[in-house]
Image (tube, rainbow, N blue to C red):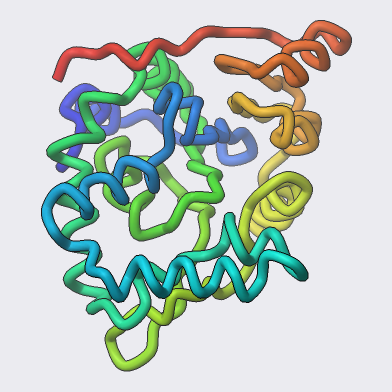
Amino acid sequence: MVNPQICSVIEAGSQYETKTAAIFDVDGTLIEGTSLERIFFKYLLSRGHIRLVDLLNLATTFVHYAATDWRRATRTNKSYLRSRSADFIKGLARDCFEQQIIARLSRKGLEQIIRHKQRGHRVVLLSGSLNVLLEPLRDYLQADEVIGSTLEESNGEFTGFLVGPHPFAVVKKICLINWAEANGICLAQSYAYADRWTDHQMLACVGHPVAVNPDRRLLRIARQLGWIVERFSNKQSQ
């Protein structure tokens, strides 16, 4: 599914200013007050797609790593998807996006994306969320790039582990720098939008940082550094 407003911008034939990008965090920024994965987990649970064994996998992984690797026990713990068909989960992710996520997208955030596209900027979704959840959003927004967390696959099934970097905190900054260098992007003339203190290092990489729906710590930094502060509402008509 593609947003018709954004599609019309592309059809108008705008040309890329290839060195300028607009980088958008997703959870808490384009979707206020929640995350893609939280919505998806509740969606799976409400439709009976979370089995007892999935919850046991989640709990077992948490207990195993809680004392030694808190990040692996929590943020990168995707063991509720272990041994699930990758194609099946991807299909559910797209259905969840159409049924529950589109209506939660920020109207102001979408308008900002359209403005960047009209100016020929490359639109990037940079998030710690799973790529399987970000890809339907990318298609809807006609974003140029997704940088997220990748679930490992084996024999057509998810293993419950991530492969590659998990874009969170300083890793998010590193992912952005690496992508920009590989794609000839000038971060000094680029824009970034995010909502959490843990995003401040990524925001500081660009010439035009915007704190969106900021938590207290990010708001304090934004005021100290003279960054723009904006409120993206999650109310938008479908």
